[in-house]
Image 1 (cartoon, rainbow, N blue to C red):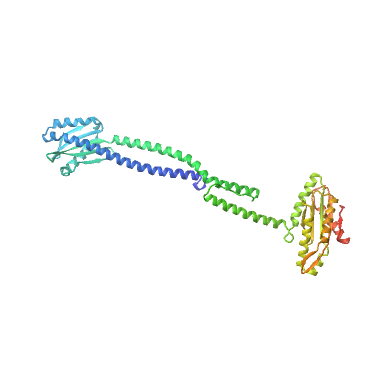
Image 2: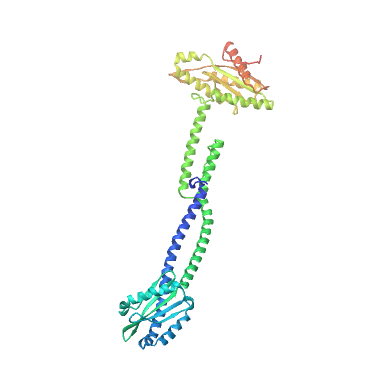
Length: 423
């Protein structure tokens, strides 16, 4: 069996609401039952005392004139009340004068009760002789009232009436049954309400869980969560969105660091090789031409030696900017070495690739580079190009071919474009 802490939050909320409601109903039922019992007890004793008061007044003459027959006849009228089990008249000496016993009252328990009451009446006859109106008592089965019988202002005896608690028990039993039914009905209603209410608490949580699960599966951080609730969940959502935004920004920075050359802002070698593989695979599948152009800055070591490495960095950034702006929108320009650049020309035949490389070479040749330690200078680039419809997805042969073409351009006098051929 699962431990409570291992249950889902939905079940926990339903159990919590149900347990709280059950506890509240139980406390309410106990308090109501106690108040009802005390109220009904007081009413029953008061009613029995009233019967005893009326009967004691009627019995005054019979006891005063020692008329036991009249006393027995008057006590017999009590049989009209089926709850009265017995009635006993005691004289001022505490001796039994007359007794009434209903047929339903013939039991050992009632006999013991009457004996106890006789002893009590005898023991309390001094108290009954005073201004006190009577004595009342109740146990689980019986209730009794002892009332003094007065003549000329003094107590000449007492009347003890014993009644069963059947009516009180029936009222309490009816109350318990009704209270139980009401409590069950209330718990059922609360149960269905709690099922509805738990969604108010759990829906935002499960919404965030689903978003987090989606992010973990797709690595897509361009999501956000929103809620119409203006409670703590809204604060949670806002902080979650802020966290996702920070992760998204950090992920973008990491992605740029992983795919971008830090100096020039172009794609780095790793990213260029990944994109090249994708382009070659697509060209191979569609039987389209794919072009490559490899550039190298001429006499770059001389620039570093004469003007320093900061000037060399300026030259590399300027050349990178020219290549990037001169390339077609869907081409990729990457820095793949110290002063080497690679241009990937998607869906480009040999002539188109050559024209692109030649345009880039001319733009670099014309550029006047500023900010080189107070000097201006110009540089040139050599390029090797190659284009074909790939017969395989292997990119190594293409890179070797364009690299050989670049080597041929540099050996042929630099500042030129050389076309490679697969040998």
